[in-house]
Length: 311
Ligand SMILES: [Zn+2]
Image (cartoon, rainbow, N blue to C red):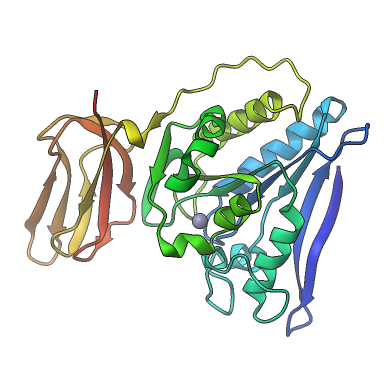
């Protein structure tokens, strides 16, 4: 295991910002490389536990390496220190700053240096954990244009769901868009909830990454644990539920559970006058794959997402 600093810059109060890379290299020369990235958003901590599990595992099986495995545990380290989603103090979303720039504001430099470091990897995995508002089941998100290229790789990752969505302009400034353009097959994982660690999901993804490393020849290991076959958004429909009134959201269903048509997903209540403001009912049978975790809602706030398989 080699710990390297791939980028550093002085901060005003004598502190230093840096991006750390943990490199696992096989004994024999190899240019085959995979990069695992986490912590682009400072309020997403699930990836911190996943990288810990990975580093621990790879230290134990260092003699089984057959390619270079690079781990970048915490890209937005100042954000993680202060549990801030955006880059501190610029309030720029690093995942909207790619491909970045070698000069200028720090978030753009971080993006640039990360791209330069990861460039040339065969595969990259970018681990996110939703935000503080919504809880997500372990899923890979792929833009429509990369679907053919990435779907079979995403199926190796032991996630519950693959969400293929239409590319919108804003997504073009993400890490995954930049890396896929440069020929690195890049998967974006979303799971859990911001500011928390969902151990079950972290272990699930960890097993998936080990499986992917073995399947793609980065690790020479006998590893036969079964992996999940994910459902895929193109085989069904995704429903969005938004708050029609402001108030406090009380869920009546559990996250990652199937509901039946007419089941109540949750209620919006008014603590001021004791009224039930709104009741959110499911229009069909389906899986609640996103559920609001943060109780305060405004008109339009996302409450849940439901997946309905079309057979
Ligand atoms: Zn994120």
